[in-house]
Every structure is written in structure tokens, then in C-alpha cells.
Image (cartoon, rainbow, N blue to C red; front, side, top):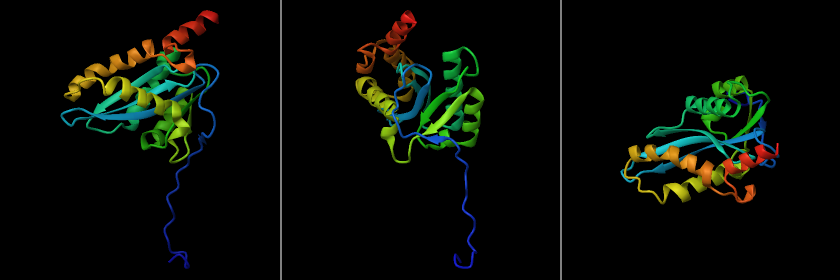
Length: 197
């Protein structure tokens, strides 16, 4: 069939956004945000999945969404993007382009998500396929979340987990020290930056 040109055309999807293959950390806040998902299982078997956006400079987790026994959808990612823009800029559009580095998961690469990101003033950037280390900041946060919060907390069911997750993220932002931030928490680092600006 191939020799006689009888095969159907392959599906082609446009991916104009750039592929990230360089350094993740940037020199100031709100230049690059990183996003990824996480998952853990409660003692009763309920699966909690979430997605978050973290700033590549100050390490603050800006916005997140969590679902139980379901997958993170494109709509969840779009809601997270909007919340991040509103929290950081107090408006529904970024005043300058902010790069959002993600993996190649369907919720991130969906056409609706890419269009919505552009409308918010965000520029989608994807890691190379099968290269999670390219989004190392997000991967490090997921490891921290699981090590310092999930594994040391009794989680009998999803209701318990959902009641704790917001507190975990706030504790991370307020209290968790980072070697890259001179052993300050993200919010301490932001406050110090604002004091010198």
C-alpha cells in the first residue's frame, strides 16, 4: 500500500512552542514558571492527583489543583494557569511573557490549553520527550512533597488528604528552606528581594 501511495495521511498536530533544553533556573521571578503533576495513594486505596505551578527563581508554589480518583484535565491546568497569573500580577493577563515549562502530557499540550496560555500572556515550553530531568525544579518539588509531607502524615482516606494539602503547600512556601535560596523559604526569599528592590 505504501508503494502505491494508498496509506492514510498521518495525523499532524501543530506544536509551534519551543522545546526546552537548557537551564531551568532564571535570574528573577516571573520569567519562567514550571508545572508538573503528582500522585499518591491513601490507605483506603483512593488516589489523589494534583498539578501545580512553581516559579523557577523564587521557588514559590503559586497555584495548584487536586482531584480524587480521576486524572488532571486540561480544564484543571487552565484554571491553575489563571490562578497563578491572578496571584502574581493581580490581573487576568501577565504584563510580559512568562514562560511555562511543562512535560508533554495531554492536559498541557491540548490546543485549548495552549490557546488559553497565550491569552493569559504565558508562553508554553515543553521538555524533550522522555526527559523529566529537563523540568528538574518541578520533579524536585514533587520529591519534597512526598518525602516531607505525604510519607510522614497519616492518610486514611482522600477526605483527610484534601483537608491537608492546602496547608502543605502553604507550609512549603512559608517555611521550607532551599539551598538555592541561601536556606530561606520561598516567601522569605521574596520578602528579602522586595526589601532590596
